[in-house]
Amino acid sequence: MSDTSEIQTRKRKHLEVCLQEPVEYTRLTTGLERYRLRYRALPELALEDVDLSTQFLGKTLKAPFLIGAMTGGEAHGGRINHALAQAAEELGVGMMLGSQRVMLEHPQAQSSFQVRAVAPRTLLIGNLGLVQLNKGYGLQQLRQAVELVQADALALHINPLQEALQVGGDTDFRGLLHKLQGLLPQVEFPVILKEVGHGIGREIAQHLANLPFAALDVAGAGGTSWARVEELVHHGRILHPELVEIGIPTAQALVECRSVLPHKPLVASGGIRSGTDAAKALALGAQVVAVARPLVEPALKGPEAVVDWIQNFLHELRVALFAIGARTPAEALGRIENVQ
Image (cartoon, rainbow, N blue to C red; front, top):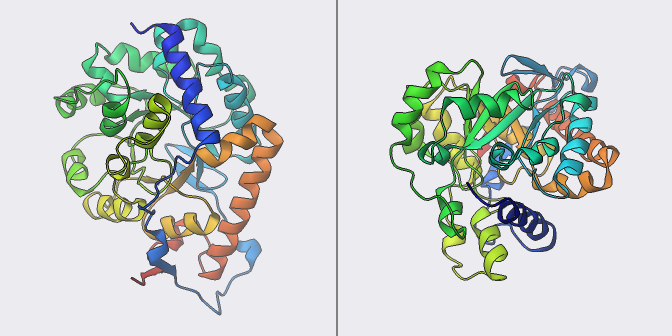
Protein backbone atom coordinates (compact mmCIF):
# COMPACT_ATOMS: atom_id res chain seq x y z
CA MET A 1 0.00 0.00 0.00
CA SER A 2 1.19 3.51 -0.73
CA ASP A 3 1.99 5.93 2.04
CA THR A 4 -0.88 8.31 2.79
CA SER A 5 1.28 11.42 2.81
CA GLU A 6 2.88 10.51 -0.54
CA ILE A 7 -0.49 10.11 -2.29
CA GLN A 8 -1.97 13.21 -0.67
CA THR A 9 1.13 15.26 -1.47
CA ARG A 10 0.97 14.18 -5.10
CA LYS A 11 -2.70 15.06 -5.35
CA ARG A 12 -2.08 18.45 -3.75
CA LYS A 13 0.74 19.13 -6.20
CA HIS A 14 -1.46 18.06 -9.12
CA LEU A 15 -4.03 20.62 -8.03
CA GLU A 16 -1.47 23.38 -7.50
CA VAL A 17 0.13 22.80 -10.90
CA CYS A 18 -3.25 22.78 -12.66
CA LEU A 19 -4.10 26.11 -11.03
CA GLN A 20 -0.74 27.84 -11.42
CA GLU A 21 1.14 26.39 -14.40
CA PRO A 22 0.55 26.09 -18.18
CA VAL A 23 -0.69 22.49 -18.28
CA GLU A 24 -2.49 22.47 -21.62
CA TYR A 25 -1.03 21.12 -24.83
CA THR A 26 1.06 23.73 -26.61
CA ARG A 27 0.91 22.29 -30.14
CA LEU A 28 -1.93 19.79 -30.24
CA THR A 29 -5.45 21.17 -30.27
CA THR A 30 -8.78 19.41 -29.82
CA GLY A 31 -9.32 19.49 -33.58
CA LEU A 32 -12.79 20.93 -33.07
CA GLU A 33 -11.65 24.13 -34.79
CA ARG A 34 -11.47 22.09 -38.01
CA TYR A 35 -15.24 21.67 -37.96
CA ARG A 36 -18.05 24.15 -38.57
CA LEU A 37 -21.61 23.75 -37.37
CA ARG A 38 -24.14 23.83 -40.23
CA TYR A 39 -26.02 27.06 -39.60
CA ARG A 40 -29.74 27.15 -40.43
CA ALA A 41 -31.20 30.57 -41.17
CA LEU A 42 -34.72 29.12 -40.74
CA PRO A 43 -34.46 26.68 -37.81
CA GLU A 44 -38.26 26.22 -37.63
CA LEU A 45 -38.26 26.32 -33.83
CA ALA A 46 -38.07 28.85 -31.01
CA LEU A 47 -35.06 29.10 -28.73
CA GLU A 48 -37.26 28.04 -25.84
CA ASP A 49 -38.11 24.84 -27.74
CA VAL A 50 -34.56 23.56 -27.40
CA ASP A 51 -34.63 20.80 -24.80
CA LEU A 52 -31.18 19.91 -23.44
CA SER A 53 -32.36 16.95 -21.36
CA THR A 54 -30.50 13.74 -22.10
CA GLN A 55 -30.68 10.10 -21.05
CA PHE A 56 -27.34 8.76 -19.87
CA LEU A 57 -26.51 5.65 -17.84
CA GLY A 58 -30.15 5.14 -16.98
CA LYS A 59 -30.73 8.65 -15.61
CA THR A 60 -32.19 11.83 -17.08
CA LEU A 61 -29.79 14.76 -17.10
CA LYS A 62 -31.15 18.27 -17.59
CA ALA A 63 -28.29 18.83 -20.03
CA PRO A 64 -25.70 16.59 -21.74
CA PHE A 65 -23.01 17.70 -19.30
CA LEU A 66 -20.77 15.95 -16.79
CA ILE A 67 -18.48 17.61 -14.28
CA GLY A 68 -15.30 15.71 -15.10
CA ALA A 69 -13.00 13.83 -12.76
CA MET A 70 -10.75 16.11 -10.72
CA THR A 71 -9.62 15.47 -7.19
CA GLY A 72 -10.16 14.06 -3.72
CA GLY A 73 -8.11 12.76 -0.84
CA GLU A 74 -6.14 15.93 -0.12
CA ALA A 75 -6.72 19.13 1.83
CA HIS A 76 -8.87 20.93 -0.74
CA GLY A 77 -10.40 17.82 -2.30
CA GLY A 78 -13.46 17.61 -0.11
CA ARG A 79 -14.18 21.32 -0.44
CA ILE A 80 -13.91 21.14 -4.22
CA ASN A 81 -15.98 17.96 -4.56
CA HIS A 82 -18.76 19.24 -2.32
CA ALA A 83 -18.99 22.52 -4.26
CA LEU A 84 -19.09 20.62 -7.55
CA ALA A 85 -21.70 18.21 -6.24
CA GLN A 86 -23.96 20.98 -5.00
CA ALA A 87 -23.77 22.66 -8.40
CA ALA A 88 -24.49 19.38 -10.19
CA GLU A 89 -27.53 18.81 -7.99
CA GLU A 90 -28.88 22.30 -8.60
CA LEU A 91 -28.43 22.12 -12.37
CA GLY A 92 -29.38 18.48 -12.88
CA VAL A 93 -26.10 17.50 -14.54
CA GLY A 94 -23.77 14.59 -13.78
CA MET A 95 -20.52 14.39 -11.85
CA MET A 96 -17.51 12.11 -11.99
CA LEU A 97 -15.28 11.81 -8.95
CA GLY A 98 -11.50 11.88 -9.01
CA SER A 99 -9.54 8.65 -8.62
CA GLN A 100 -10.71 6.85 -5.47
CA ARG A 101 -7.65 4.67 -4.94
CA VAL A 102 -6.53 6.87 -2.06
CA MET A 103 -9.81 6.39 -0.19
CA LEU A 104 -9.78 2.63 -0.65
CA GLU A 105 -6.27 2.35 0.71
CA HIS A 106 -6.67 5.02 3.38
CA PRO A 107 -10.25 5.18 4.74
CA GLN A 108 -9.63 8.54 6.42
CA ALA A 109 -9.73 10.06 2.92
CA GLN A 110 -13.26 8.81 2.22
CA SER A 111 -15.05 11.92 3.41
CA SER A 112 -13.56 14.04 0.62
CA PHE A 113 -15.34 11.81 -1.92
CA GLN A 114 -18.64 11.33 -0.10
CA VAL A 115 -20.90 13.95 -1.64
CA ARG A 116 -24.18 12.07 -1.91
CA ALA A 117 -25.65 13.98 1.06
CA VAL A 118 -25.52 17.24 -0.92
CA ALA A 119 -26.39 15.64 -4.26
CA PRO A 120 -29.08 13.02 -3.59
CA ARG A 121 -30.44 12.92 -7.17
CA THR A 122 -27.26 13.58 -9.13
CA LEU A 123 -25.81 11.03 -11.54
CA LEU A 124 -22.62 10.27 -9.61
CA ILE A 125 -19.80 8.30 -11.22
CA GLY A 126 -16.97 6.75 -9.21
CA ASN A 127 -13.45 6.40 -10.57
CA LEU A 128 -10.54 3.95 -10.37
CA GLY A 129 -7.44 3.35 -12.47
CA LEU A 130 -7.79 0.26 -14.65
CA VAL A 131 -4.10 -0.55 -14.12
CA GLN A 132 -4.90 -1.27 -10.47
CA LEU A 133 -6.30 -4.59 -11.68
CA ASN A 134 -2.63 -5.55 -12.05
CA LYS A 135 -1.89 -4.37 -8.51
CA GLY A 136 -4.30 -6.68 -6.69
CA TYR A 137 -7.60 -4.90 -7.27
CA GLY A 138 -10.62 -6.91 -8.34
CA LEU A 139 -14.38 -7.09 -8.12
CA GLN A 140 -14.37 -6.27 -4.40
CA GLN A 141 -12.53 -2.97 -4.89
CA LEU A 142 -14.75 -1.98 -7.83
CA ARG A 143 -17.81 -2.57 -5.70
CA GLN A 144 -16.33 -0.66 -2.77
CA ALA A 145 -15.58 2.35 -4.97
CA VAL A 146 -19.26 2.50 -5.88
CA GLU A 147 -20.84 1.52 -2.57
CA LEU A 148 -18.77 3.74 -0.27
CA VAL A 149 -19.85 6.89 -2.13
CA GLN A 150 -23.27 5.62 -3.25
CA ALA A 151 -22.32 6.13 -6.89
CA ASP A 152 -24.54 5.17 -9.81
CA ALA A 153 -21.69 4.00 -12.03
CA LEU A 154 -17.92 3.56 -12.13
CA ALA A 155 -15.32 4.95 -14.52
CA LEU A 156 -12.16 2.95 -15.06
CA HIS A 157 -9.45 5.24 -16.36
CA ILE A 158 -6.55 4.27 -18.60
CA ASN A 159 -3.48 6.51 -18.52
CA PRO A 160 -0.25 4.78 -19.60
CA LEU A 161 1.57 7.96 -20.63
CA GLN A 162 0.76 9.74 -17.38
CA GLU A 163 1.84 6.74 -15.31
CA ALA A 164 5.09 6.45 -17.26
CA LEU A 165 6.01 10.05 -16.40
CA GLN A 166 4.81 9.88 -12.78
CA VAL A 167 7.51 9.09 -10.24
CA GLY A 168 6.67 5.58 -9.03
CA GLY A 169 3.84 5.31 -11.55
CA ASP A 170 2.10 2.00 -12.27
CA THR A 171 3.24 1.06 -15.75
CA ASP A 172 2.29 -2.62 -16.16
CA PHE A 173 -0.69 -2.48 -18.51
CA ARG A 174 -0.39 -6.12 -19.63
CA GLY A 175 -3.45 -8.35 -19.71
CA LEU A 176 -6.00 -5.70 -18.79
CA LEU A 177 -8.37 -6.49 -21.65
CA HIS A 178 -8.53 -10.11 -20.51
CA LYS A 179 -9.23 -9.05 -16.94
CA LEU A 180 -11.99 -6.71 -18.12
CA GLN A 181 -13.62 -9.58 -19.99
CA GLY A 182 -13.85 -11.51 -16.76
CA LEU A 183 -14.89 -8.65 -14.49
CA LEU A 184 -17.43 -6.62 -16.46
CA PRO A 185 -20.12 -9.33 -16.66
CA GLN A 186 -20.01 -9.61 -12.85
CA VAL A 187 -20.63 -5.97 -11.90
CA GLU A 188 -24.11 -4.75 -11.01
CA PHE A 189 -23.57 -1.15 -12.12
CA PRO A 190 -22.65 0.63 -15.37
CA VAL A 191 -18.93 0.89 -16.12
CA ILE A 192 -17.36 3.61 -18.24
CA LEU A 193 -13.91 3.27 -19.76
CA LYS A 194 -12.02 6.55 -20.09
CA GLU A 195 -8.68 8.07 -20.89
CA VAL A 196 -7.42 11.04 -18.90
CA GLY A 197 -6.66 13.42 -21.75
CA HIS A 198 -4.45 11.66 -24.29
CA GLY A 199 -7.26 10.11 -26.29
CA ILE A 200 -8.71 6.74 -27.29
CA GLY A 201 -8.42 5.89 -30.95
CA ARG A 202 -9.77 3.42 -33.47
CA GLU A 203 -7.43 0.57 -32.57
CA ILE A 204 -8.40 0.52 -28.89
CA ALA A 205 -12.08 0.98 -29.71
CA GLN A 206 -11.87 -2.16 -31.85
CA HIS A 207 -10.42 -4.12 -28.92
CA LEU A 208 -13.26 -2.86 -26.73
CA ALA A 209 -16.05 -3.64 -29.19
CA ASN A 210 -17.14 -6.91 -27.55
CA LEU A 211 -16.83 -5.79 -23.93
CA PRO A 212 -20.05 -4.97 -22.01
CA PHE A 213 -19.12 -1.49 -20.82
CA ALA A 214 -21.83 1.15 -20.64
CA ALA A 215 -20.03 4.10 -22.27
CA LEU A 216 -16.64 5.28 -23.47
CA ASP A 217 -15.06 8.62 -22.58
CA VAL A 218 -12.67 9.41 -25.44
CA ALA A 219 -10.86 12.04 -23.29
CA GLY A 220 -8.84 13.39 -26.18
CA ALA A 221 -5.81 15.64 -26.44
CA GLY A 222 -6.12 19.40 -26.67
CA GLY A 223 -6.97 20.33 -23.11
CA THR A 224 -4.91 19.40 -20.07
CA SER A 225 -1.91 17.17 -20.79
CA TRP A 226 -1.49 14.97 -17.72
CA ALA A 227 1.94 14.00 -18.99
CA ARG A 228 2.79 17.70 -18.80
CA VAL A 229 1.27 17.93 -15.30
CA GLU A 230 3.46 15.07 -14.07
CA GLU A 231 6.64 16.65 -15.40
CA LEU A 232 5.79 19.98 -13.81
CA VAL A 233 4.93 18.29 -10.51
CA HIS A 234 8.12 16.32 -10.23
CA HIS A 235 10.67 18.46 -12.06
CA GLY A 236 9.25 21.96 -12.02
CA ARG A 237 9.76 22.16 -15.78
CA ILE A 238 9.15 20.20 -18.96
CA LEU A 239 12.02 17.78 -19.51
CA HIS A 240 10.51 15.97 -22.50
CA PRO A 241 8.60 18.49 -24.66
CA GLU A 242 7.80 15.91 -27.34
CA LEU A 243 6.49 13.27 -24.94
CA VAL A 244 4.04 15.61 -23.25
CA GLU A 245 2.46 16.42 -26.63
CA ILE A 246 1.57 12.79 -27.46
CA GLY A 247 -2.14 12.20 -27.87
CA ILE A 248 -5.12 11.83 -30.19
CA PRO A 249 -7.06 15.11 -30.55
CA THR A 250 -10.55 15.02 -29.06
CA ALA A 251 -12.41 15.46 -32.35
CA GLN A 252 -10.36 12.74 -34.04
CA ALA A 253 -10.82 10.36 -31.09
CA LEU A 254 -14.56 10.99 -31.17
CA VAL A 255 -14.87 10.35 -34.92
CA GLU A 256 -12.73 7.21 -34.78
CA CYS A 257 -14.53 5.72 -31.78
CA ARG A 258 -17.94 6.51 -33.28
CA SER A 259 -16.95 4.75 -36.52
CA VAL A 260 -16.04 1.58 -34.61
CA LEU A 261 -18.70 1.75 -31.88
CA PRO A 262 -21.70 3.35 -33.61
CA HIS A 263 -24.20 2.36 -30.91
CA LYS A 264 -22.06 2.88 -27.80
CA PRO A 265 -22.70 6.05 -25.76
CA LEU A 266 -19.66 8.32 -26.03
CA VAL A 267 -18.48 11.06 -23.69
CA ALA A 268 -16.47 13.86 -25.29
CA SER A 269 -13.88 15.35 -22.96
CA GLY A 270 -10.45 16.87 -23.36
CA GLY A 271 -10.37 20.60 -24.02
CA ILE A 272 -14.15 21.12 -24.18
CA ARG A 273 -14.21 24.76 -23.14
CA SER A 274 -17.43 26.24 -24.49
CA GLY A 275 -21.01 25.47 -25.39
CA THR A 276 -20.06 25.65 -29.05
CA ASP A 277 -17.35 23.04 -28.47
CA ALA A 278 -20.03 20.91 -26.86
CA ALA A 279 -22.41 21.36 -29.80
CA LYS A 280 -19.67 20.28 -32.19
CA ALA A 281 -18.95 17.21 -30.06
CA LEU A 282 -22.63 16.28 -30.07
CA ALA A 283 -22.74 16.76 -33.83
CA LEU A 284 -19.77 14.39 -34.15
CA GLY A 285 -21.51 11.69 -32.17
CA ALA A 286 -21.08 12.30 -28.44
CA GLN A 287 -24.03 11.78 -26.09
CA VAL A 288 -22.62 14.02 -23.38
CA VAL A 289 -19.55 16.17 -22.78
CA ALA A 290 -17.37 16.44 -19.68
CA VAL A 291 -15.49 19.48 -18.38
CA ALA A 292 -12.93 19.40 -15.57
CA ARG A 293 -10.07 21.88 -15.24
CA PRO A 294 -12.06 25.10 -15.97
CA LEU A 295 -14.23 24.27 -12.96
CA VAL A 296 -11.44 24.00 -10.38
CA GLU A 297 -11.13 27.74 -9.69
CA PRO A 298 -14.90 28.27 -9.48
CA ALA A 299 -15.16 25.28 -7.12
CA LEU A 300 -12.64 26.87 -4.76
CA LYS A 301 -14.89 29.94 -4.64
CA GLY A 302 -18.00 27.88 -3.92
CA PRO A 303 -20.97 26.16 -5.57
CA GLU A 304 -22.50 29.44 -6.77
CA ALA A 305 -19.44 30.15 -8.93
CA VAL A 306 -19.62 26.65 -10.40
CA VAL A 307 -23.31 27.10 -11.17
CA ASP A 308 -22.61 30.42 -12.90
CA TRP A 309 -19.86 28.89 -15.07
CA ILE A 310 -21.95 25.91 -16.13
CA GLN A 311 -25.07 28.00 -16.76
CA ASN A 312 -23.12 30.24 -19.13
CA PHE A 313 -21.74 27.15 -20.89
CA LEU A 314 -25.21 25.62 -21.24
CA HIS A 315 -26.71 28.88 -22.51
CA GLU A 316 -24.13 28.90 -25.29
CA LEU A 317 -24.88 25.24 -26.05
CA ARG A 318 -28.61 25.97 -26.24
CA VAL A 319 -28.07 28.87 -28.65
CA ALA A 320 -25.68 26.80 -30.79
CA LEU A 321 -28.25 24.00 -31.08
CA PHE A 322 -30.94 26.56 -31.94
CA ALA A 323 -28.68 28.00 -34.66
CA ILE A 324 -28.36 24.61 -36.36
CA GLY A 325 -32.05 23.77 -35.97
CA ALA A 326 -31.56 21.02 -33.40
CA ARG A 327 -34.41 20.73 -30.92
CA THR A 328 -32.49 18.21 -28.79
CA PRO A 329 -28.83 17.23 -28.34
CA ALA A 330 -29.50 14.05 -30.34
CA GLU A 331 -30.75 16.09 -33.31
CA ALA A 332 -27.34 17.78 -33.54
CA LEU A 333 -25.80 14.60 -34.92
CA GLY A 334 -24.35 15.18 -38.38
CA ARG A 335 -25.11 18.93 -38.50
CA ILE A 336 -21.46 19.75 -38.96
CA GLU A 337 -18.88 19.88 -41.73
CA ASN A 338 -15.12 19.50 -41.88
CA VAL A 339 -13.58 22.70 -43.19
CA GLN A 340 -9.91 21.68 -43.15
